[in-house]
Length: 121
Image (cartoon, rainbow, N blue to C red):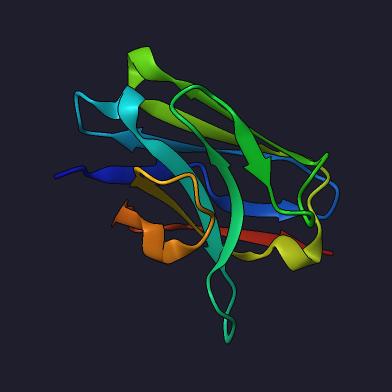
């Protein structure tokens, strides 16, 4: 069982930055693929970015060049640096852990509770 806890969400003006963190409870954290997904009201959960155990990354086109994912295996934590935030980035952001390199939610077995990111004009 893997427990994930997100933090770092909040209210930010368009163009601003936030850094989200995802802390995991498992000792085998380094073996997991960690993904970030987001869900806006009335919309389906969508893929944002994922990082593999060897730190290879895949980004959604909508966040490429604005968001950066990284992991610190010594701290069992993944970070999501979000820059140049847009109104359309407003959503609940979830981190998830799995074994697959796929980018759709069904491949991730463990999920955090989510953290709200609100971008204002």
